Every structure is written in C-alpha cells, then in structure tokens.
Figure (cartoon, rainbow, N blue to C red):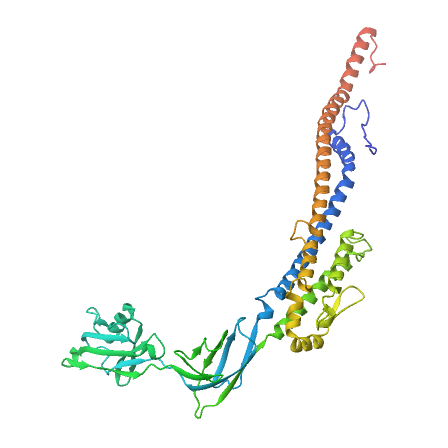
Length: 457
C-alpha cells in the first residue's frame, strides 16, 4: 500500500483532521489491487467484440454459400426471352422450367365475354329484372333495387349478388348503358343475358341487352402441338414458364421462346462469396497486427486467428474429382499473398456457359466443395456450440466471471475495512479535538495548587 500522507496539524490546536478525506485516500490505495483485474476485463471485452465481429462475418459467408448449395436456389433459377415481344412477352420462368428453346405460333387471342343494355338516361326509373347465365352455369335473376331503381342501382345489385360477372354503368353523350363483363375468361365464360327490364320514365319501354363480345379461347401451336388457353396469360403450355399473348398477326409467324440458366445471378452470387471471404481474411490480418498507436490488436497472438486462417485456406484449396470443375481455381478464383482471393469473371462466365451442370455439381453434390466448405464454416463460426469462435467466447466468459468475482470480493473486503477505519479515525479525531480542553484543566489545577498564574508570571 502506498503512503497515505496524513497531516494532523498541531496536536494542541484542537482542529483534528478530515476523517472522510483520510478514509477515502486509504480506500483508493486498497483499490489499486483491482486495477490489473479491471485492465484484463477490458482486454477480454475488446477480444469479445472482435470475436463476435468475426462470427458475424463467418455467418454472412455461410449465407452466401447456402445460396449456392440450395437445390431450389440460384442454380435452379431460369430466365427467358421472346424473339418477338410485340406478339409474345415472357413473364417468368420458375425453377421447375427446363432450359431449352420452344417454338410458339399465336393463331388467335383469348377474349372475355361481355354484354350491354340499350341506351337509357342515367336517372330513368327502371322496373323488372335481368337474368344472367355464365357459360353452362345456372341462370341467375337479379331484380331492380326498389330503393335505387336506376342503372346504377341495378349495377350495384348485380355486383352484390356475386354471380360471376362485373356490372358497370358506361355513360357518353347519348346516355347510359349497363355493361356486364364475365369474370370467367375464354369460351367457358360466354354470357347469355335476357332482359325483363322496362324504363318507366319513358312510357314503360323495354330495355334490351345484346352480346357485345363472345368468350373465346386463345389458340396457338407450341412446338407443333395445338393448344388453347382461356386467358392470354398462358401458364400451362411450357412447364414452369408463364408468357403473355399480346397479338395474333396475320399471317401467323413462329416465335422463339428461349429458356436459359440464370448464369448472371450465379456469377453475382459467387462474386459475393469471394467478397465476403476477403472481408474475413482482412479482419484476421488486421487482428494479427498493431493499431495506429503501435498497440497490439485485441486478438494479437490468439490461436483462434491461426485456426480460422488455416481452416479457410485449406477448405478453399481442396480439390474434388477430376471433372471440368474440380476446384475453386477452375472457376477463376486465385489466391493472393495476404490470404485474400481474386475472381476472374471471364473464366467464370466461360465455365458457366460451357459447363453449367459441372459448376452446379461442384457446389451442390454430396461431398463436394459446397458441403465441405459449409462443414468448415460450422466448425469455425459462432452459430454452433463447438465452433472455434463460440469456444473462444465461452473461455473469455469464464475468465470474466472469475475476475468479476475477485473484484466483488475485494470490494466487500474494502467496504468492511472502510467501516472499521472510519470508526477508529473518528475516535482518534475526538481525542485530538479534546486535548486543548484537557490542557486548560491541568493549567487551572496547577494554578490552584501553586498559586502561580501563567498570565501573571
């Protein structure tokens, strides 16, 4: 313990000393033993932060790899094109689609059946009912709404009946008409509308309905096979492919629909994997050095860094089989001196265009690069209880618990000593403060005995 350096002043002054300041100075000296423990706790906390950061980066790398190893993921994705987008537009190609070229000849477009009433004034009062049949379905009768006996009221009543049609009032300079559109596209939705309506405003004249458009199915040849579709959005002609029919030119001409593997997205996913791999390696390199002030980084000299670096490089350098893609280097990936890697996009694009299935197998086959690298990441990251990062964090957690226990015990000991010191020094201070009074009493006794007065003598 260092020197306290108490200054009691003159013993006969009666001033005593500052007990609180004295006790606090002694406590400060007692707490000095905790400084190494607290410094170690700070170092461990800094290590935890860096370990957690590395764990997060490894988790990101795991996600990148999963995008490449998932059987229904990016390698299964397809993209397509149409040789004439004015006639046929490709909407989507799902993972169930098969790469290849198809020939489509659009012969006619699908159309939805519609019917409309004769012209009446929008405010005219109607009476009666209208009967509507969709395709071969049951005939549905809708009566004029007594509370709103107009075309608008009848349209609202038809829509509320939910009979498979949509009714709308169309108005122009000639007046208003009630339009009825089938909710079922194609031939199956052909409307039959019979009217029992009268316009009471104009001497009870009849309001007739006529068919405006017959429901028709689209007709096309797909790879020479005659097909029909109730809708111009065709989803069942080519498995996994949805396309939109836009026109039926005359004479009909063949259109090429090409379904291809989504090599662009695969290349992007591999580039993302390379980028995030390099982030991990750069973080490791940083921790193996010193900061701008020349102080070692928190994980400087840690065996975890060496384990991460060696395991990742070993997994990256592994070879699998003897096919066109047997290693990461076959894809244009090369190693740099600092442990990072580079990707030659030209090499990768060429490999994807010529050996797509081999690239896919390299990531997705059992015992391939994808499975091996995923296992390596599991053994290193913080997502698994046995991962190197997890074990290092747990070891630090144990040390931190022990240090905090030591500090707590020291603080409890200091608290007891502080209480005792305060009591003892308060007692001593009282003695010091009482000395002048005791001296005066002695002087008075001496004067009474001897008759000698200090003030007179």
